[in-house]
Amino acid sequence: MNSNSLVILVRNKHLKAKISGLILALMLAFVTVLSVNLGWANIGTRDILCIIAGKFTGSSDLYSHLNPAQVSIVWDIRLPRILCAVVVGWGLAVSGAVFQAILMNPLADSYTMGVSTGAAFGASAAIFMNVFYLSSMPIILFAFAGALLTLAVVISISRTGGYVSAANLVIAGIIVSCILSAAISLIKSMSGEQVSAIVSWLIGSLAARSWEHFLFGFPLVITCTLLCCYYAEDLNILSLGDQEARNLGIDGSRLRIVFLVCGALITAVCVSISGIIGFVGLVVPHLLRLLVGSDNRILIPLCALTGGVLLLSADTFARSFMNVEIPVGVLTTLLGGPFFFYIFRKRNKYIQ
Image 1: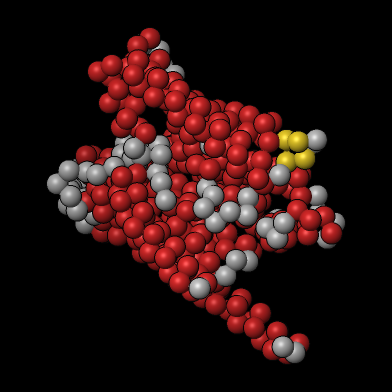
Image 2: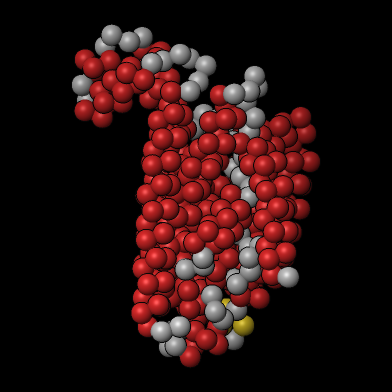
């Protein structure tokens, strides 16, 4: 392949990525607008726009003709939930792409590292104390702290001679995840009849999410995503292996810790907001690699948009088209499992 052909190939690749990004951004905007309009309460599009414009500008005259209950439904119930779905889907997909790259494992995600299990343990402990000791433990902060402590323990266990390897991280993550899963089971068995409170959180749901959840998660997810995008070229090199990274003058161990912290922070925020939502961080990066390749400079931004579209669409379907609301974590697992199996089989046939 001569230099001119290579330039054309790179230009086509970047053009394809830009077109894909534009299409995904438009899809995200469309699904967001559609989601605000869907619900059991029949509120017109014009009224919704009046409410949003009035709230943002501080002009209550724009929605003074509406029932206060309608204003509350749009601004306090629907919109925070929709934005939380976008943030969580965005974050889970980005963290999945990062974990798969740094661990050089296509099946890796936050579950592999034990970060999700750590967040689940923190939230379960908070719920247990709230129920039985009548305290006011903030579940979101306990889940966040549990995820970060789990990451610290995993890195500490996996460090050998001051160096953190991908293989050690996977093994350490599995060990810590098994221990924490047993601890969660112990908490559930001690909860007796109140175990439903813990189970309902663990299965993953975006119901009753507020502006507080969004304002807590959005800045952290955006900041970590931008940091991952900034170092995406180094991540490409790191995904080739530690030896290749050292040959190119990159400190693989230190860079791996930076990405681990970013991925864990994103996962901690997402799990603390929504509970355990599976397969988003696993399926989205796989799907996009089939479409645009493995260049993380392209993959990470597209994962963010695709994850937001996917989880928001699933949550909107779960709350709007069923007689009983299905937890979105259950829906993503039921749909994501067979879909991932299909991708996995298709990929193996292609390799053969």
